[in-house]
Image (cartoon, rainbow, N blue to C red; front, side, top):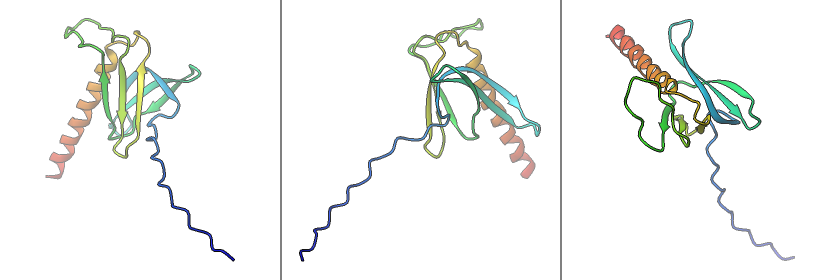
Length: 133
């Protein structure tokens, strides 16, 4: 009886990173909410493939970047983000979600909510650091 030759083992194809927000496609709104213990939490409302809005809590430690096709004017008045803008949510464990902004209706409030959340997290971290010293 002949012995079978061992087949070479093929390396597994790399998997795409899991999304932070499964099934989310477009970012509709963003809000900073202080939870019961006073910790800041960022929530986003995103549409899925069927256009149904869903609410997601952004996990702690997720980096958020907003990319616009051209620079935004630096003024105090309300500014609409241009068509083609996107928000990227990147977790430390490699999960990534890139959400296109909901046409051009999404306003500067998204940027303000993201900046306010970053400031609140930074301030809370400084308070914890001072209390421990």
